[in-house]
Each structure stands twice: as structure tokens, then as C-alpha cells.
Amino acid sequence: MHIVNTRADLDALRSSNPVAHEAFIANLKGSLTRLTDIREYPAGYDRNLQSGDEGYLAPQIGEVPDDTTAARFGYSREQLEVI
Image (cartoon, rainbow, N blue to C red; front, side, top):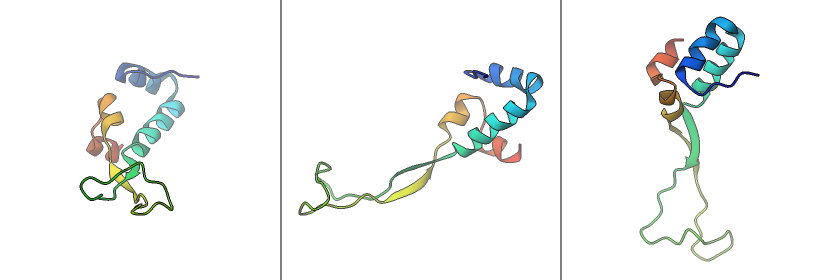
């Protein structure tokens, strides 16, 4: 098991265990998008409404870009796309 907390840990992993490094990079690439509720709700919409309640609007789940995890390890989206 390899614990990777920093870019230095990740860089060290490249030479000590290239397969684990490649798997970690693949996971970073996968983290470039996240699923979230992308519905635009009307002003004042009560988000505590449940399915079946009058006025309830179901969430609309969609993918949105999220570079946060990659940036934490010193990578940009563009850098990961060419690795």
C-alpha cells in the first residue's frame, strides 16, 4: 500500500512503483469531473421539499469540471490530458 499525500510522494512513487504511479495518475484524471446537482432552482426555492411535496423539483445530476484534486498534486487539467 502506498500513501500519497503530496506531489513529492507521487514523484517518488514514479520510480519506486511505476504501476502504482500510473494508477494514481489515472485516478487524478478521473477526478477532473464530478457529479453534482446542476438544476437552476427559482429564487427562494425550499430545498427541504421531498419527492411528492407540492412544488418539489427533482435534482438534475450532471458532470461539471473540477480540477481541485489535480491542482492539489501540482497538475493542471492540460498536463494530465497529455500524460
